[in-house]
Figure 1 (cartoon, rainbow, N blue to C red):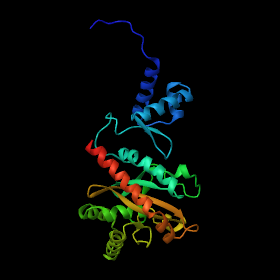
Figure 2: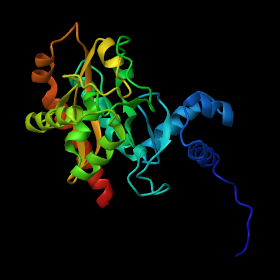
Figure 3: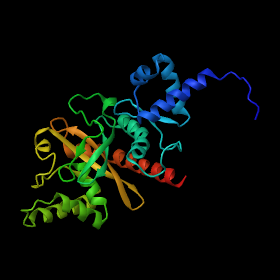
Figure 4: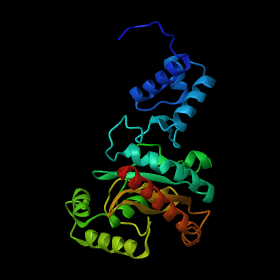
Amino acid sequence: MIERKVKTVRALERGLQVLSEIDRRKGANLHELHLALGLPKATLLRMVVTLGKHGHIWQRLADGAFLPSARSGRISGELTSQGIAEAASPHMARLSEQVAWPSAIAVPKADCLEIVETNAPLLRLDAIPLGPVGSRLSFLHTATGRAYLAACQADERAAIVKRLRPQQDDGSGERLLDELLAAIRERGYALREPFHPWADRDWQAVRQDGRRSMAVPVMLGAFPVASINITWLQRRSETATVVQRHLGALKRAAQAISADLAANRDA
């Protein structure tokens, strides 16, 4: 091949630099890109919008960070927490337009769930600061955890419960948990109430933070891969009222996320 002196496309070079920096950092906000690359923020904003439009990156609702897209082919095609967050993000943005209370989606991590995305910044309710991304939730004491436990297969549920069961339990705690999960499966959504006696993480918080939540699982085929919730202030709304008004929207969001995950897996 004969080498020739050909001018490069400066705008394309800059766009590739931005993409490489986001890939290298596994995510970055506009200010971090500005510091790393020295480009004006107005220029960077145009670039990230263009990269997002063409499916190379996406912007997380929780903190505004730009992350590599799981759909771009540059990262593993296996289902990941980031892939779930990316699929959930646009549906959670729409959910924020329908429900005046914030939502978070969390994925299982051994003995807890980890928040991977939240639409709380869109609603700007300082009294309910859900997250941040990486926050860990109890399987036992949150609606999000209970929704996942109720939906998962018996062997997975038994393994999780084994990690959480206190040594001194006489069997009554596990029987109560079985009853709670059966009730969740029957009505189709989970609540924080009634309380469970095992002293898992969030043991005190769910009694003192003045919040209530409902949650449903996000399914991929017959298996849950995440749970999504709606959280509200107890003093502002009765549980029955929130369930009546917003359960349908929550379920539709979960189903839409499930459909996107299935489509991405089969693509």
